[in-house]
Amino acid sequence: MRNKLIAKGYSKNTIRNYLYELNLLLRLLKERSVNHLSKDHIQSYLLWLLQHHGCSETKVHTAVNAIKFYFEKVMGRDKEFYDLPRPKKPFKLPAILAEEVMDLIKNIENIKHRTMIMTGYSAGLRVSEIVGLKLKNIDSKRMMIHIQGAKGKKDRMVPLSKILLESLRSYFLLYTPKEYLFEGQFGGAYSTRSVQEVMQLAKQKVTNKTGSVHMLRHSYATHLMEAGTDIRIIQALLGHNSIRTTMLYTHVSKLAIEKVESPLDKLKW
Image (cartoon, rainbow, N blue to C red; front, side):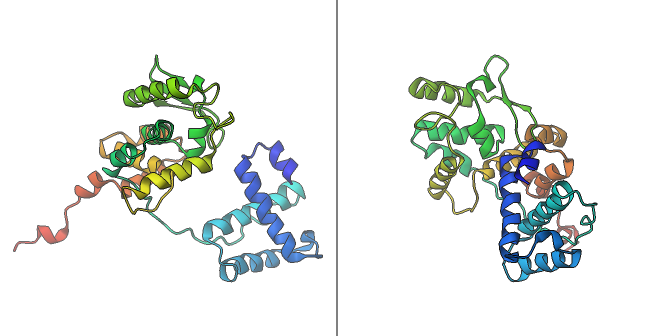
């Protein structure tokens, strides 16, 4: 299954998640062969994940995808599992930062850490995209950042902030990275876990809102929308396949909500 996932070009995260989910099922079955499971068995297993194993809807979706991949792509079965019932994912609004962004950035004393967080917010990057940036991806002449091999193996271009460029230059003179824009202590790309730790420590000083580095990406998109940026442009900057994903930010945009007048205010008092 691992070889098939690699051959089909799945991301490292997806490969790890799919193999974990299949391994969980195999350990539960013990000596019984997974190949003998029927559709009813799989449905019972998914129900067990939800009700007894305490799994989230998102995790069960991943389990379904992993099982489908094994039976259809590895074992060569027909697409008999496409109609498996999937739990409805809860609709949750993304957590965003407002004026706290400025305080969060200013409270980071280490210039390397501060510049990483500035990069994430200024370009709406995922944490994997922050650590994956290389020196060659920063085009100061065109004032663009080239994001390569992002989610879905897609490249995209995003504007390079003038303020970020100044910070990057100061950071570069002090740290002189060789290949990756943000390198670890012994070279190579900085770890995503370390960036998350930087974000958590900085966030604790300015807000009690919960969220990871991805909060910077949510904030970037929401602030662009509040500034009147066309949603199609925001979609391209974020690298979303579907406009429906980008539309999520209309639910948290203060500008969009403020335009709606309460029916109570329309009554004649």
